[in-house]
Image (cartoon, rainbow, N blue to C red):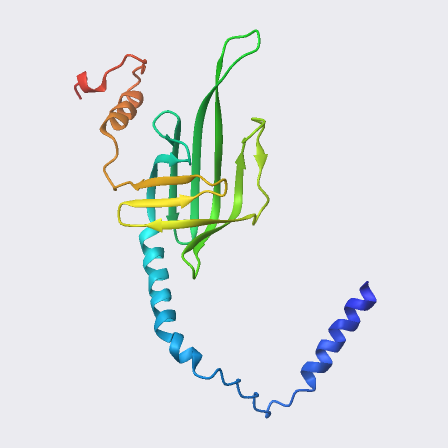
Length: 210
Protein backbone atom coordinates (compact mmCIF):
# COMPACT_ATOMS: atom_id res chain seq x y z
CA UNK A 1 0.00 0.00 0.00
CA UNK A 2 2.85 2.38 0.83
CA UNK A 3 4.58 1.65 -2.51
CA UNK A 4 1.33 2.32 -4.33
CA UNK A 5 0.87 5.64 -2.50
CA UNK A 6 4.44 6.78 -3.29
CA UNK A 7 4.01 5.75 -6.92
CA UNK A 8 0.81 7.80 -7.11
CA UNK A 9 2.54 10.84 -5.63
CA UNK A 10 5.41 10.49 -8.10
CA UNK A 11 2.92 10.20 -10.96
CA UNK A 12 1.13 13.36 -9.84
CA UNK A 13 4.45 15.20 -9.42
CA UNK A 14 5.60 14.12 -12.86
CA UNK A 15 2.31 15.25 -14.37
CA UNK A 16 2.60 18.64 -12.64
CA UNK A 17 6.18 19.14 -13.79
CA UNK A 18 5.29 18.22 -17.34
CA UNK A 19 2.87 21.13 -17.67
CA UNK A 20 4.26 24.15 -19.46
CA UNK A 21 3.24 27.28 -17.53
CA UNK A 22 3.08 29.11 -20.86
CA UNK A 23 0.36 26.80 -22.15
CA UNK A 24 -3.05 28.47 -22.32
CA UNK A 25 -6.01 26.60 -20.81
CA UNK A 26 -8.34 25.02 -23.35
CA UNK A 27 -11.39 27.10 -24.20
CA UNK A 28 -14.61 26.27 -22.35
CA UNK A 29 -17.15 24.40 -24.45
CA UNK A 30 -19.95 26.46 -25.92
CA UNK A 31 -23.25 25.74 -24.13
CA UNK A 32 -25.32 27.33 -26.88
CA UNK A 33 -26.26 30.35 -24.74
CA UNK A 34 -27.99 28.29 -22.05
CA UNK A 35 -25.95 29.94 -19.26
CA UNK A 36 -27.12 33.36 -20.48
CA UNK A 37 -30.73 32.21 -20.46
CA UNK A 38 -30.38 30.82 -16.91
CA UNK A 39 -28.50 33.84 -15.56
CA UNK A 40 -31.62 35.66 -14.21
CA UNK A 41 -32.83 32.49 -12.49
CA UNK A 42 -29.38 31.83 -11.02
CA UNK A 43 -29.14 35.40 -9.72
CA UNK A 44 -32.63 35.15 -8.18
CA UNK A 45 -31.77 31.84 -6.52
CA UNK A 46 -28.55 33.22 -5.05
CA UNK A 47 -30.36 36.32 -3.79
CA UNK A 48 -33.06 34.16 -2.15
CA UNK A 49 -30.39 31.99 -0.57
CA UNK A 50 -28.71 35.03 0.98
CA UNK A 51 -32.06 36.38 2.24
CA UNK A 52 -32.82 33.09 3.97
CA UNK A 53 -29.35 32.98 5.52
CA UNK A 54 -30.05 36.40 7.02
CA UNK A 55 -33.57 35.54 8.16
CA UNK A 56 -32.62 32.31 9.94
CA UNK A 57 -30.08 34.02 12.19
CA UNK A 58 -31.11 34.42 15.81
CA UNK A 59 -32.94 32.51 18.53
CA UNK A 60 -36.05 30.42 17.91
CA UNK A 61 -38.47 28.71 20.32
CA UNK A 62 -40.38 25.60 19.29
CA UNK A 63 -44.10 26.40 19.11
CA UNK A 64 -45.44 23.05 17.97
CA UNK A 65 -44.76 19.87 16.01
CA UNK A 66 -47.08 19.05 13.13
CA UNK A 67 -47.53 15.40 12.25
CA UNK A 68 -49.87 13.91 9.64
CA UNK A 69 -52.38 13.12 12.39
CA UNK A 70 -51.99 15.77 15.13
CA UNK A 71 -50.29 18.85 16.48
CA UNK A 72 -48.12 18.62 19.57
CA UNK A 73 -47.12 21.53 21.76
CA UNK A 74 -47.03 22.85 25.29
CA UNK A 75 -45.88 20.28 27.83
CA UNK A 76 -45.82 17.51 25.23
CA UNK A 77 -42.76 18.85 23.47
CA UNK A 78 -40.47 21.85 23.91
CA UNK A 79 -37.47 23.05 21.99
CA UNK A 80 -35.00 25.79 21.19
CA UNK A 81 -32.71 26.54 18.26
CA UNK A 82 -30.11 29.22 17.64
CA UNK A 83 -28.30 30.10 14.39
CA UNK A 84 -25.26 32.35 14.20
CA UNK A 85 -22.09 32.53 12.06
CA UNK A 86 -22.58 29.07 10.54
CA UNK A 87 -23.19 27.35 13.89
CA UNK A 88 -26.51 25.94 15.08
CA UNK A 89 -27.55 24.74 18.54
CA UNK A 90 -30.67 22.61 18.94
CA UNK A 91 -32.49 21.18 21.97
CA UNK A 92 -35.73 19.18 21.68
CA UNK A 93 -37.53 17.67 24.70
CA UNK A 94 -40.65 15.54 24.59
CA UNK A 95 -42.68 13.85 27.31
CA UNK A 96 -44.78 10.74 26.98
CA UNK A 97 -46.68 8.58 29.45
CA UNK A 98 -45.44 4.98 29.56
CA UNK A 99 -47.77 2.42 31.07
CA UNK A 100 -46.03 0.29 33.66
CA UNK A 101 -46.39 -3.48 33.87
CA UNK A 102 -47.33 -4.23 37.48
CA UNK A 103 -46.01 -0.76 38.34
CA UNK A 104 -47.32 2.78 38.23
CA UNK A 105 -47.28 4.67 34.95
CA UNK A 106 -44.25 6.83 34.39
CA UNK A 107 -43.54 9.98 32.41
CA UNK A 108 -40.43 9.48 30.30
CA UNK A 109 -38.54 12.25 28.59
CA UNK A 110 -37.10 11.91 25.11
CA UNK A 111 -34.55 14.39 23.89
CA UNK A 112 -32.32 15.43 21.03
CA UNK A 113 -29.61 18.03 21.50
CA UNK A 114 -26.47 19.10 19.75
CA UNK A 115 -24.19 21.66 18.19
CA UNK A 116 -23.95 21.68 14.41
CA UNK A 117 -22.43 23.50 11.49
CA UNK A 118 -25.12 24.66 9.07
CA UNK A 119 -25.66 26.24 5.70
CA UNK A 120 -28.61 27.14 3.51
CA UNK A 121 -28.22 25.24 0.24
CA UNK A 122 -28.72 26.57 -3.26
CA UNK A 123 -32.15 24.89 -3.30
CA UNK A 124 -33.11 26.56 0.02
CA UNK A 125 -32.80 23.54 2.27
CA UNK A 126 -31.09 23.62 5.67
CA UNK A 127 -28.02 21.37 5.70
CA UNK A 128 -26.32 20.47 8.99
CA UNK A 129 -23.21 18.56 10.02
CA UNK A 130 -22.86 17.41 13.61
CA UNK A 131 -20.09 18.72 15.86
CA UNK A 132 -21.49 17.06 18.99
CA UNK A 133 -24.96 15.66 19.53
CA UNK A 134 -26.99 12.96 21.21
CA UNK A 135 -30.52 11.60 21.41
CA UNK A 136 -32.51 8.86 23.13
CA UNK A 137 -35.16 8.14 20.50
CA UNK A 138 -36.27 4.57 21.14
CA UNK A 139 -34.57 2.78 23.99
CA UNK A 140 -34.14 5.89 26.16
CA UNK A 141 -30.41 5.17 26.22
CA UNK A 142 -28.29 8.03 24.94
CA UNK A 143 -27.02 7.57 21.39
CA UNK A 144 -24.21 9.89 20.36
CA UNK A 145 -24.01 11.24 16.82
CA UNK A 146 -20.97 10.78 14.64
CA UNK A 147 -18.87 13.88 14.00
CA UNK A 148 -19.92 15.51 10.69
CA UNK A 149 -23.06 13.32 10.51
CA UNK A 150 -25.18 15.14 7.89
CA UNK A 151 -28.87 16.02 7.89
CA UNK A 152 -30.99 18.01 5.48
CA UNK A 153 -34.28 19.75 6.24
CA UNK A 154 -36.87 21.26 3.97
CA UNK A 155 -37.22 24.82 5.20
CA UNK A 156 -39.39 27.90 5.08
CA UNK A 157 -38.45 30.99 7.07
CA UNK A 158 -39.89 34.45 7.59
CA UNK A 159 -39.33 37.30 10.05
CA UNK A 160 -41.47 35.54 12.66
CA UNK A 161 -41.64 31.81 11.83
CA UNK A 162 -39.24 29.01 10.94
CA UNK A 163 -40.52 25.65 9.70
CA UNK A 164 -38.21 22.65 9.41
CA UNK A 165 -39.24 19.31 7.98
CA UNK A 166 -37.54 16.83 10.34
CA UNK A 167 -36.06 13.68 8.71
CA UNK A 168 -38.79 11.64 10.44
CA UNK A 169 -41.43 13.51 8.41
CA UNK A 170 -42.68 15.89 11.11
CA UNK A 171 -42.69 19.65 10.75
CA UNK A 172 -40.96 21.55 13.56
CA UNK A 173 -42.52 25.01 13.79
CA UNK A 174 -40.49 27.68 15.62
CA UNK A 175 -41.30 31.29 16.47
CA UNK A 176 -38.61 33.94 16.74
CA UNK A 177 -37.52 34.96 20.23
CA UNK A 178 -37.09 38.68 20.66
CA UNK A 179 -34.13 40.10 22.54
CA UNK A 180 -34.93 41.34 26.02
CA UNK A 181 -33.57 42.32 29.39
CA UNK A 182 -32.29 39.79 31.90
CA UNK A 183 -35.33 38.42 33.85
CA UNK A 184 -36.00 40.52 36.95
CA UNK A 185 -36.99 37.44 38.96
CA UNK A 186 -33.66 35.77 38.23
CA UNK A 187 -31.78 38.97 39.04
CA UNK A 188 -33.49 39.33 42.41
CA UNK A 189 -32.82 35.67 43.18
CA UNK A 190 -29.12 36.18 42.50
CA UNK A 191 -29.04 39.30 44.66
CA UNK A 192 -30.78 37.48 47.49
CA UNK A 193 -28.38 34.54 47.18
CA UNK A 194 -25.39 36.92 47.27
CA UNK A 195 -26.78 38.46 50.45
CA UNK A 196 -26.83 35.04 52.12
CA UNK A 197 -30.58 34.46 52.16
CA UNK A 198 -31.96 31.00 51.53
CA UNK A 199 -34.11 30.71 48.41
CA UNK A 200 -37.00 28.37 49.13
CA UNK A 201 -39.60 27.02 46.65
CA UNK A 202 -42.29 29.32 48.13
CA UNK A 203 -40.14 32.46 48.00
CA UNK A 204 -41.83 35.33 46.14
CA UNK A 205 -39.28 37.80 44.72
CA UNK A 206 -42.03 40.30 43.97
CA UNK A 207 -42.69 40.72 47.69
CA UNK A 208 -39.11 41.57 48.60
CA UNK A 209 -37.67 45.04 49.13
CA UNK A 210 -34.07 45.87 48.27
